[in-house]
Amino acid sequence: LRRESLDRAEERLESMCEERARMLQEQFGVTVNHVHALGVLVSTFHYEKLPSAIDQDTFAKYTGRTAFERPLLNGVAYAHRLFHHERELFERQQGWNMNTMKREVAPPQDEYAPVIFSQDTVSYLARIDMMSGEEDRENILRARTTGKAVLTNPFRLLGSNHLGVVLTFAVYRPDLPADASVDERVEATIGYLGGAFDVETLVENLLSKLAGNQDIVVNVYDVTNASEAMVLYGPPSSDDKMTLLHVSTLDFGDPFRKHEMRCRYRQKP
Ligand code: WA2
Image 1 (cartoon, protein in one colour):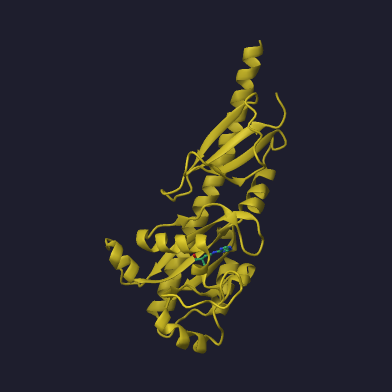
Image 2 (image 1 turned 45 degrees about the vertical axis):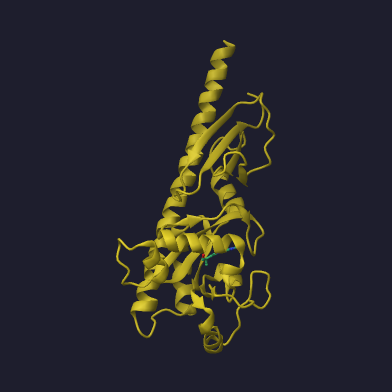
């Protein structure tokens, strides 16, 4: 009898965990796809058209109206690739100077990635050189060599100070062939489109709508480095070997990273 109720508790935990993992993965996937399409939009309407058919106002309007397509993102922004020799003219034409993530004047670098377009919800990113932040910089470099969606490890986001991950797509000149080499990709890079998954707020929101939510504790981890899992969502775990645990794998679409969801009962069943 004891064995039977334990089996049932295990099954229920597994099915609740899988339901949550599949739902989160699905919402992540549609969000990433839509950001990809926005990158193509910028490539087409900012670079193929001369003069550009996008400015800050158009970008803010369009991204605001299509925000429902990106349910897990707190906003999107476009950072322009800028070389040092172009900086003076760029700042004069824009009428503002670049800042770092720490709100200081950007020191001289070989190249920069200042945000020139932003959705209103992340307007605090405007004028910031995204290469001045360690996580964003790594994402930018990996996005442009791979041509794929890339994610940072979990860190505290600008603005909210919430735990989350940043998503980045490189934007290429429209003439980049599909079979381009890594060097050709880097050379054809004209900017970066991305935003932050505010996991702390948006996953909470998602899970709070599901039945049985009061019964279980959910954590999401970045387990890219198996020996040091990083919490992305949920309370610090209580490593209690006595409670049932179910682990569901998550695929957020960046093959360089591994994520998983771990579910436990709040109280012993
Ligand atoms: N977006 C929102 N909040 C952040 C953040 C970010 N990056 N970095 C730290 N807090 C414009 O890769 C290009 C967005 C980065 C894209």
